[in-house]
Length: 277
Ligand SMILES: C[S@@+](CC[C@H](N)C(=O)[O-])C[C@H]1O[C@@H](n2cnc3c(N)ncnc32)[C@H](O)[C@@H]1O
Image 1 (tube, helix red, strand yellow):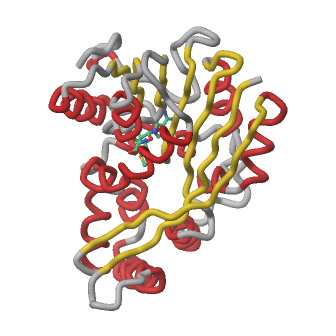
Image 2: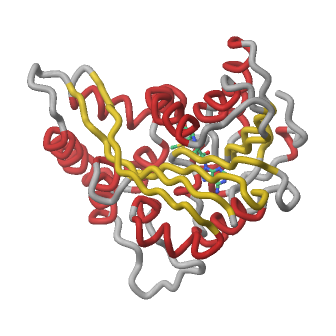
């Protein structure tokens, strides 16, 4: 891995602890189409300096590298970056990978022409800090491209289910206050986060397919590979787990559009592009 931060020296941040669970790449790779669409919307071109944050196993970084950009893929989880590096090597495209938290990007001001994050920055605990950092490392005139699951779509509905089982303690003040990541899928939240530091803001709602043999198979796959779902189930009392599993599968059935007994969910996300002033 061509990382400037040796794996053994990286502290286990809360993000790293959470997202090291399971094999995220197995489900993440199915959303490559979202990454390809985002870099096409951003018109990434040869030689541009692109930073992909919370880039996981490299979907969006690779999409930009395929357009001959000079790409750095960052994430909290070194094991996911190893997969990104392996994918780049198999495709024979250059890719730099570096362990970094979204809220504390180890790059100078204005060092990138393009900053991207597909379903990544939305999971940073401090939304304002994440937005600040992504804009800080982007040069004036540079382009920002993000995608986030919407609160009313499939991933937002799962979050609502887990908050019903495990509501945040009412008397516990959180600093920063805990706002669901799917708030990044709401136009007003994005406008408030980016403010007047961007222009040409485009907000488009799209869907991408999540497929499985059937909804039960989807549950079995996601409990193994989707870190937030695995963490939610691990936090439940053993006697709650069977009910939560039934509810999750019933929810998947509500979103399932397949009529042949299989599973195909059109998962909704907000795609955001903007130019840094
Ligand atoms: C749903 S995955 C998306 C990965 C990738 N962007 C993609 O489109 O496949 C979320 C990623 O965000 C990373 N992540 C979450 N919080 C983070 C943080 N605070 N700093 C850096 N990475 C973070 C996780 O490690 C994980 O790889």
